[in-house]
Image 1 (cartoon, rainbow over the protein chains, first blue to last red):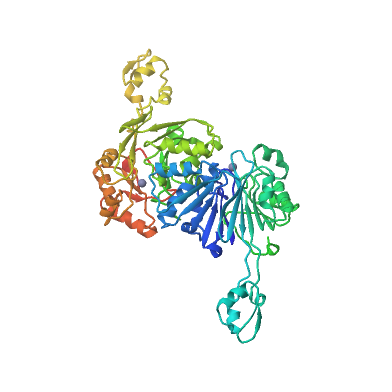
Image 2 (tube, rainbow over the protein chains, first blue to last red):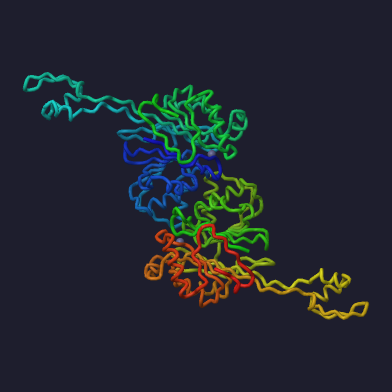
Length: 314
Length: 314
Ligand SMILES: [Zn+2]
Ligand SMILES: [Zn+2]
């Protein structure tokens, strides 16, 4: 599981940062990729990565500002052109369906796959399968905006079949009992404890990906105990008033949420073009005074998310 | 007057060619820039040029396929963000207004300027001012598609005021008579012929910019005697059948139109990603066998359009 940042800028594309998009790479977990936002040029950025558009099976839109959605029609078209034919689901605020369908209709684009739209009405769980559950909550932006929390289910310890075979324990219903942690007696008289053949259980990872927002309690709800929190940082330390007026956050507000929520790592994105190279580092330095495991991300940064959040490095 | 190519590829963005857009730079002529088509990423391409979005006062859309329009909403937003406040006119097929207005509405984008939409219904003149007249004609594509012909009005010879002063001919109503080419007698007895004081007249330039199209008679009408013809070349010499089936043209078809229409220069764009570097040169070489003044253009090619079309070089 990795996060690959495709656009880390704010508002308009700049020479160094494209507008918003990031990919949650779940190739090992479910052989697919989930995209969060798709500003203009997202498909151009993807061309420079190893991501294949047909692997994208879910797109989560935080809000409908142009720098978060204007790349969607082109990406959907290219996914079709490149042979994608599996269903794609788009989650987002009411209006995303109208935007996508109008764009496809006007351009007479016929896709090779079906799009399911989920326009979010209520906060809470919006998706769940055997491995992941996704929650959405409203943030505080000028336009309706959602933050997402992706919870990986805890990994049960697996039955160590190789070890069972090695110890010449024949397969059969007894495997089910051992997997349930029971102690069984074999026909040959051996007494076997299931726990000796169950692998290490692992807590699932939690990723919180927030959209544009002012400081708001829901950010903390989404971020609580997350392994990784992706938070906007449109403004700097001394600009809390500006941030409030423009419905955005400062780096310090993001760092406070990360610290109070005991997150593993804070990734700051949505960086204004006013903050060029060195100044972006200053944003990071300021935030680190509150929450040391902070990083200001750049386009194409690829961040690994290990199981043990304590092992995360900067 | 120059043409600057912003995207010369076909269908989807590639690593080397972006989707369709070109700028007709009329900075000397009318201190503005006219854009033809705006595929996704056009504003990103513009960032790498000297073009300022607020100088763009007209956008002509050939047709509504995504690779020609999906960059429009983002470009319009950035033009506003960068302080453009003068009216912008968008010409194109019916539907362009709905696409733009839906995109702006859904994203709650408020522009700092007024957009006038001209959805073209009838072929013929669509715009005229004291310097240029623009004509549109229908081409033959899968979707309604227009080609544009921009005619610069002939330059009347200017009255050479400096020379008049040098010869100590006092200003007054006599200047008007001289400008009209008359012969006048001055108070001091000198007889002056107006033609000696009128500069060189110049024929206006003609630029034909075609959208995606099959071979069709209207292409020749638009191209007739043009100084520059911009024509798509999605397919190569041996692919006339494919070109027909996909509503596109071959390089040879374009070259024939250029030759028969006595154009100054043929610029081939809308090059398929199947034609990489060397193969694109082969497209050019093939077309040159019919019309030698042919060039396959690349993104960021800047083509000057001099007054005397015979002086154009390749
Ligand atoms: Zn926003
Ligand atoms: Zn087309």
